[in-house]
Image (cartoon, rainbow, N blue to C red; front, side):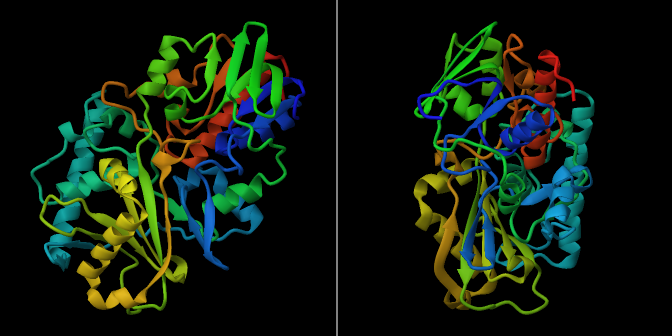
Length: 422
């Protein structure tokens, strides 16, 4: 591609789930395309590394959310990937120096369900206030409710619109993949032609077409599909000439990415009894301290994984890898005793999505007052610039399959615009 100009139907920028599904859909519809990726790999926020041979670890996407509606379930079946049909989420709570007893756990879950009902009621009324404005912040479970929301939205409850939360199509089916979601995406898209290490530096556009400049050359096309994150758009990661209209930039700014990071520690041995709950949410310190959810030996594999989100996750990321590992270790010692230290190896994997130059965050959450901005983000500019990605999904945002579906939908719109139906 270096130094060349190719006149294609669509230039796709970004080889995450949206860009990859768009490339496949373009090929199926007879559209010529070039797929550009700034980094050295495909997959975007779907990425799997190995702790050791046979022990995969997802750094980003991990659960097939809303599984009965999720196209990646069929893809996983076709490619022989295995998954569990339950998320084993929120199963055990440690606070005040002890795990909750059965009766207290039941009372907490009923309170949390009441909070969710209040959120649903506010959303049904079209309320576009913050989640923090409609839940019981005085309840003992409030820090846990706030923490779990920070994982689901990557932002804190005062930063997220109730209306956005209730727009999400949640079937409460969150199925984790043993081999890794990132590995699934990489395998599914292995044959997609993509130019790596080709950051789109400038997009020049007009009613007659698009020109995209990269370090590997310049490409011309009739349309462009931009799938980069909202944080990359608002940070000026791509120069547009002329600049994007104000309404587009306002939509991107209303849907900022927050933080959802994972901290993995490989085990030297299995210190847990056979009947140990597979997950625990552990609070260390006073009643207002931010908890941490911990997966214990997922799929029977010898590692532990903790999850951080929102402002606390951002703070830990800036504090560094050692601080994140220390925090998870502190939670483990508080809940399971100091003897667990000898079972923790020095092999760790810690994500830092806010620092990743190609994403600048984990996934999007709509700010209060902007709960209906996702459709605006997806709206084309002059039928030349099209936009896809999880932030532009109106019902499956924050997910890999939401991004996947937007890529296909926008390619269909481009095919209709160019009069190239299926």
